[in-house]
Image 1: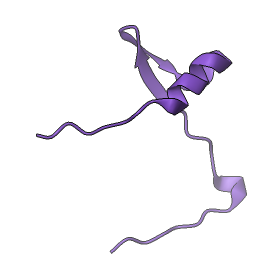
Image 2 (image 1 turned 180 degrees about the vertical axis):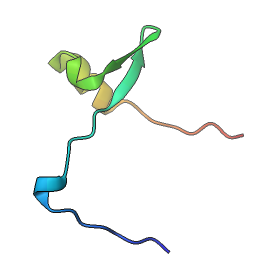
Image 3 (image 1 turned 45 degrees about the vertical axis):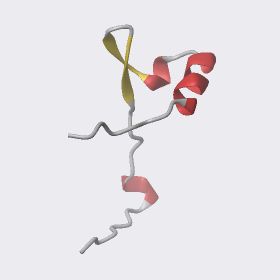
Length: 49
């Protein structure tokens, strides 16, 4: 069963997303606007086991 917990706005915090670029990991927020746009357009997939 999935329970949904709603936190008040004062207790919420922003989630920082990191990705691997050119062999090392960086936060997406540190990208320039063009690279952030490119990141949003990426196709995500799950490789079968």
